[in-house]
Length: 576
Picture (cartoon, rainbow, N blue to C red):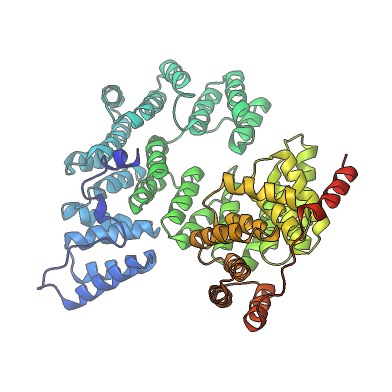
């Protein structure tokens, strides 16, 4: 699907990415311009959007009129979020021939946002061959430019005749319904909205647009029914919950979108579809067009943040999440902002942000992110309390139990060496979902490592390995299960597989050294223990590896199935 989709993109789309192969400036250009060009290329290779934008701007300033530089200056300015600069450079790129076929579209969006509808029409009509996807975007914007100059009939006729690749087809009906509303043809708009709302790929947006239309038409009862129907399938969608409460209480209907805002909504579905199928710089450019048309449309800001994050521009993504300061999407944007801050190793800052959000909202999502940050920053005692609050809150709200929160609490108990409490939480997690490989693995490993219930532990890690055969740490548990039961040859086979799957796993290498020693492969055992010291092993493994390198392993001490049977029986009797 992705390959088929990409074939529809402009021929020159490959020239858009920051680290692409660029046209080299002619030798007669100023060396200073060429130096700035090379610096921009270097910044691009290192995913430094700000640096690339600055250097391309400098190069263009030193070599004005250069088509390649104008286009690159426009593209990198958009990627870094420098919207005003992007508008200037896009105009220069259009004047130089629009090499990427995208500058014309952005300039047209800019003109629509500025209510220069005739100018937008002229730019779209004069642009070079766009290619299928860009041509679709150009048609959408052209229709809104026509509405802007009062040619609603021509816009509707053109929209009715639109053809598009199959995956884009469903967006045309919603676009036409919005055109009908903007043209004041309300009965036709209502009919088309109703036929479109639950078949379009982005239902939340369609429900929001149609519901707002119904409220403006004083059909609040129909709006309430629409919102309730949507919430039956997505009960936690905050924006629709707020719309439902407004319609039920007779609150003021949302204002009709402006032409520019309508245009942004028309473009959002196709752009979001592209973002879902292809992670590349090109996607950001379409989302920036929507941002120019409707700067306050929060779903676009959040999607921009997600896309920038996926293409490895996290600092720019942070700015997009932070820009959503109010409304029903703020909490979601704040959660994304905090997670990304944590992933950038700013854990103290992320924890402080989480604490503020929790105090402000009392929301379980804020509580969970704070708990997760505590869990990975050696504050497990505090994390456990938060997980317990989440579990209690969900139960009080009548929500279905979720194995993950019991699992995370169990992991914290394990790290605190509270093995009985960890075991209890792991068992609850398995009660909720018996086929979670990570839970099976971790409880099985806990038991194996502490000589508990070895037969049951072996069955658990074996099931986990069956469910996730490509995860090295789970195969390590299976190898260690064989080892603990004295099956050393089988242990070697599984542990070799574990280290092949995950060569940097210190525990698997440590375990393999032990298994090698037991089968008489002492030279290889010492190699594995030395390798453990080169990896990120925990202190106990480092100490163990050093002791083994000096003295080897003592006589084997395994717990047999017979020795373990009494403990299993006692556990079963105490948990009828």
